Each structure stands twice: as C-alpha cells, then as structure tokens.
Amino acid sequence: MRRPACRRSSVLFRFTHMQWSILLIGALFAVLSVGCAGPPSLPPSPRPAGAAEWNDLVSGIRDYEEGRYLDAARRFLRIIETYPGSALLEEAQWLLAKSYHGAREKEPAIRELRAFLTNYPQSAYREEARALLLHLERPDQKIVAVYWRPSFHEGAQEAFPSLQKKGFNAILLPVFDNAPGKSGLWFTAAGAPVLEDRLREWLGAAHRAGLRVFVETPLREMAWVTRSRPEWRDRRYDPKKRSLQAIDKLDLFNPDVRRMVLQLYRDLSRYPIDGIYLRDIYYSIEEGWTPSALDLYQRLFSERPDPAALFGAEAAGGEGGSPSAPPFWRWVGWRSRFISGLLNEIRMEIQSNRPYVQFGVGFPEALVSRPAQGLAEFSGDLLELRESHFDFYFLISGAGALSTSALMELFSKYAIRPEEVWLQRPISEADSLLSAGAKMPFRGVVFYREGTI
Image (cartoon, rainbow, N blue to C red; front, side):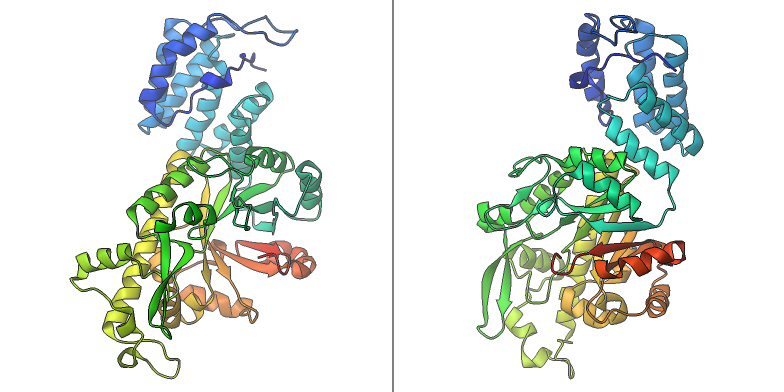
C-alpha cells in the first residue's frame, strides 16, 4: 500500500481552473511545511514537498486541463513512484485516476481509484471517487431506480442497503422542494434558500450501499425564486378572458433567469452525483407570453406574435382545435429550439466539471406518439432534443401507457435506441419488472409511489 499523506481539505485542489490551482500552491506549500498529525503507525507528518515535486504537480495540472491526459498521468505517476512520503501523494493519486479516465484508459482508472479509496478513505475526494468507480465498473448496467424523497424518508444509512437487497441499483432523488412554506434546496447554491445541505451525506450513504444517485430537478418550477423575484414569473394567456396572468413558474427567456439557472447547475455539479434528470422543461401553448420571449422572437422574425390572434378562429385547426396557421408553428418551433439550446448549455456546464455525469431529460409520450400534437401542446420536438445527444430520455407516460413493442417501434423512427430510454412505472409493478431483470429492453425504469409525483 502506498503511504497515505495527511489531508488538508481546505487547500485541496479542485483542478477545474488551472490558474486558481497554481495560485494556491504557495499557500499550500507553506501550510504543509508545518506538518500535520498522521495515524499512530505512521510518521507524525508527511515529508514537505520539494521543488521538483511541485514542478511535476503543476505541469501535470496543466497537461490535465489542456486535455493531454496521458502526459498528465506520467507526471502524477512520477510523483508517486519517485517521492515516497511526499505531502502531494493524495493529490497525485487522485489526479492520476482522473487522468486515466480522461484518456479513456478504463482498467488503469479503476485500479487507481480502488487504490486511492484504500489509501485515503477520509479524503475530501472520496465520494467523487466512489461515484466515478461505480460509473466505470458498471457502465452498461440497466438502471432500476426508485424515487427517494427527502421529505418522505428518514435514516438514509438504514434505507439504502435494503433497497439494494430488493433489486434496486439506483435512486432518483429530488433536490428541490417547492412545498408551500418550505420551498428551497437540499444543496448549497448561490442566492438560494437551503433547507439543509444534506446532499453529500445522502450521496455517501447511497454509494456505500452500491446505489447510483440521479438527482431530479425541475427547470421552470422554482417557487423560492418566483416568490422573491416576481418580475421573473412567466405569463399565461387566458383565451376566455383574453388576458395575460402571471404564474408561479420561471420565465426562461429572461437573460437574468438564464444566468441564474446556469449558476445553479454549476453549483450542483460540485457534488459527486451520478446523473441529473431534468423535468418540467416544456411550455404549454398558453404559457410563455412574457415580454422577454416576445422581444427575442421579434428580433429574429421581425414580427410580434399576438396570443389573441393565434388562439382566434382564423388560426384554428381541425377537430382537435389545434392552431395551424404558419405564425403559430413558427412560434412553437422557435420555443422548442430555444429550450433545447438551454438544455444543451446546462448539460455542457455540468459535464465540463464532471465529465462522467449522465444527463437526461423527460418528455411526455405525446412527443413520440403524436409529434405534431406534442409540438402544438408543449412546444417540444423530439428530433430537436436528439440534436443535443443526451445520455438518456425519460418517457413520462399517462394512464394509458403504450406497450413495449409499440414504444420500440416509435423510438426507432427517431433513431433512439432502447438503451437510451428510461420508463416510469408505479411501485405496484416493481415485482414483475424486477423479475424480468436483464430482459428489459430499455435502459432504465424508475418506480414511484402513486400520488407522490
């Protein structure tokens, strides 16, 4: 076993901003030179790092952040093999594992992650290391998840092992709470009310039980934001009253809201999550009539849509009553492209910090079974979503869910493979589906208790 180094979490590198990391080196060197107490069986402190070790570390960080992963791995490996007892060993081994992962060297990455967790069980990186190890060891594992809501459960340490024994291998964890009088987050984000920052605790307990954690977040339903910033609310058109009314959802077309959303997911990506499922991403035709949306549209098309005209008799379609005039389809098509672009920005924001995090979006069944109606009702287009190459697509089915064979046939028309699709099913069907196990054609299934979603 390699000799552990003492941990100083306040000065551990995050390695996402090279310049920031290098600026910290002087401070870290000064602190480490004082020493810290190690386990009784080891020397009282690691040996302070010398100039050569620092040069290798800084050069490795530079190589890593510029994408030269194998060069970075050689630098970090040299520190480990050449400087036993160095105060930089923990950082070097962690970055060695990440460098192998960046270079897509799966087996060396797994080997170094296991060694890292054995050598540094109390490291500040331990939960991220466990999450990455789970991802690498079981990359093609079908996801069998269950909703685990913080407000409905107590004692994660006791609950998670029992879920694993029942056949589940993941949990879907909502980290926003929009309940009246209690809205907020279960993680720390800039400018947001934090109920309790317990996400890292839950992640650790789940990973120790062998469960992956996919966090669930809404895109538009953030009650704590709209209550404190009413000017960021969306507007809904009432065709009967022929008037606009503010609703308690976010106006995603507002550039300030867009910046806030991206910062929120930047903060969420600091946690060692396995994946993110984004729901509530669509606009019904009655929603989204804000000055921000209308101004953006007008700048692009030199026309300003009028909800009264689009909902009027001259825009009515056939028996279903769906509008069919060209201005209507330009409006809903533009909104679909806008939302898909924002989703792609969120995905890139998260995966630039955590490349292995899986990112998925939910969509209603109408988008695949009745695409024209789905675009009219939700301003959503499955072909548009495909352009962003998400890791999975969460199909939100109604009471009359389509059969497996019918769904597979429909998805094939969009070049969506079953391995990319998640389904949701009531917990009452868990026994029959769990017994099917590997025979399930889809990538994953998420079970929920009726009345909780």
